[in-house]
Amino acid sequence: MSRTAIIAGTGPLPGLLVAALSARGEDFVLAEMEGFAAAVPGLAPIRFRLERLVPFLDHLAGLDVARVVFAGAIRRPRIEAELFDPRTATLVPQILAALRSGDDGALGAAIAIFEEAGFAVVGADALVPDLAPGPGLLAGRPTAADKADVACAVAIVAALGRLDIGQGAVVAQGLCLAVEALPGTDAMLAFVTAQAGLRPDPAGARGVLYKAPKPGQDRRVDLPMLGAGTLRAAHAAGLAGIAWEAGGVILADRAAMVAEAAALGLFLWSRAR
Amino acid sequence: MSRTAIIAGTGPLPGLLVAALSARGEDFVLAEMEGFAAAVPGLAPIRFRLERLVPFLDHLAGLDVARVVFAGAIRRPRIEAELFDPRTATLVPQILAALRSGDDGALGAAIAIFEEAGFAVVGADALVPDLAPGPGLLAGRPTAADKADVACAVAIVAALGRLDIGQGAVVAQGLCLAVEALPGTDAMLAFVTAQAGLRPDPAGARGVLYKAPKPGQDRRVDLPMLGAGTLRAAHAAGLAGIAWEAGGVILADRAAMVAEAAALGLFLWSRAR
Image (tube, rainbow over all chains, first blue to last red; front, side, top):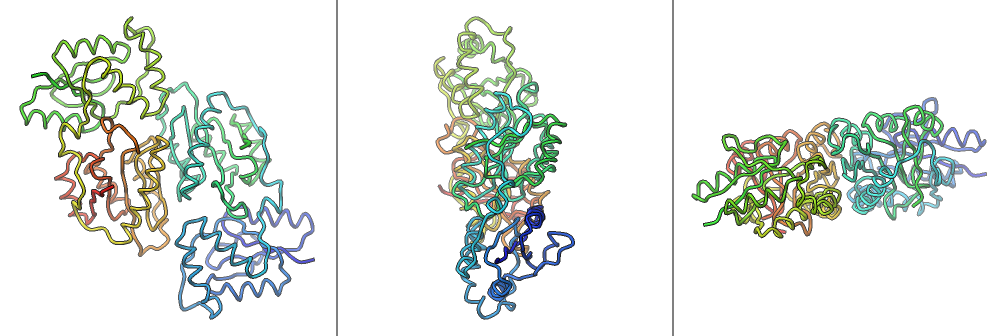
């Protein structure tokens, strides 16, 4: 049976996929871009550079890899022109255009290059469906005011996603306290924590974090993630809970999040679109 | 000749209007909502409460006020139901709906109430046209990359404004570093300062702050403002300059900003729509 290649970026997703595939007894290879810290301790990854992408694709094919999953965000690498091999050099226009075109464009271009090389590109949630929970309440219970805040955040995140700038927002009492941009969710929550006292009614709704993929986003790359760290940061920011688009967000550690949400009194709501 | 009433909120705008009207020898009255710090040192304002709005409007008419200008943001006040006078009580549905409807809705409702009481509501920029500069470069010169970042920020701010969440964004190298929400421009710039090192190319474009009114916004209320403090914060955040929609943004202290921008090497660009 042919193998799966995990193209590991930052965050916990590579480790989650390694654990799930190992538990199922499936064979895989782990690949990481040079210049980034090891994604999964104890495993020696295949290292690759964007400037030598074509030889890397050949190497994967030689290892009987048929299926590729992009796991975790890959920071834009610096390109060193003198390192290009001749065949990858023919992809330079495609690569440079991708790096200039925003997150979605860059990831779409990466998928296209792998598919043209004959690999199937699958999403982490397709490979391990348990990672992205479907609709349901996982912890606590949002109030009517919390639900109104979530509905407001849903509209904001949808509009932001169309601009390719982030996948989250914090709304309290109908007011947008913060919007996620390049620095990410943790930075946004730290910002909200530092801006305490903005809610007009101190006794009113405490606010919500909402996360969703960008509208029209290719679900095979870079789904938003939530983890126990996000939960603690949301608690520190004084929020009532976290909601996300059901099926569109990966939970890094569902059991720990649910337990901690219950202990901290936050709701966790996987909200049907 | 009838008088102008300046309804003073926070920030430097009330003081700028007082100075400009005084210099022109025009008569005015200054009014402030109870519970907020004095907007213009040395002047004793008429104090009013939202719960006694109708008696306040009568008082203004008795002072021969014909024209009203809203100057500076007014934080949402807490309403104490027992303080309503009978006539203002008839406006309660209108007032509460306004307070729930986001910034634009609240300000639109305020304008409607003053207009129904027979006052002309004018914008600060209509009263003192010099406050909101027309198209032109006031300091420095944006590079082509800076202009591309501004164009990107223009699209983001337009989309955000349609959602009634803020009037600014920071973009560097085509990437959105931050979006303005309720906490305002200074908080956004402090956030960018704390997130140093995000720009993919350390030698590339340093990024821009762009400000604009919300699309379709009634220009008579709450135009975005820029001042020397914003300029210093933009410099601290490592930005190349500040751009804004020409005619749609008030400069608190144009001469000081231009001098300081030249000293710090930032551009100031009042960009035609």
